[in-house]
Image 1 (cartoon, rainbow, N blue to C red):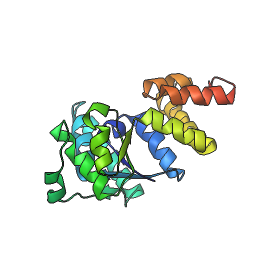
Image 2: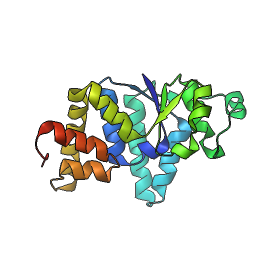
Image 3: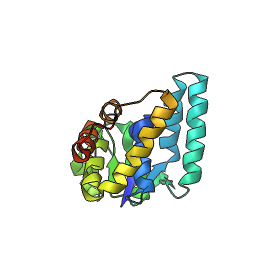
Image 4: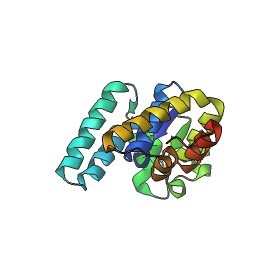
Length: 187
């Protein structure tokens, strides 16, 4: 399955790392465009020069790890598409150009299901998408989340409770599902 990742799911670090960790487990093939990555870089710049430098480094590592993920929609494709927010047309175009099955975004209102269906696409919010993958491949998703959890603990110097980390990352249902299936609180 090919999945186009909107900027709003790439920029939050934990959400991005969980999604790409699951992709690394072979559960989907990620897609994005240079414009999507550029939006991430510009959003990080609002944190100051260091924010943009860090984002650009992460983007470079992502591009090296996923060399086939970047797609380039044609101008003609961009011109023929419409969405309620014209600033999101490039995401739809990237999904079409990459032959994606789904767009992962938190901006549901900007990607009406009927318009996506006309292009053979659907959309999902990252939490619902990951919960669905967890239902079909629990070990792979749990491995990816465990790696992200360990890295968050290492970087922060604290011990994040997994469910709280997932809630902060806007993945509360995934955190709840992981906790419920494990029988413990992932302290």
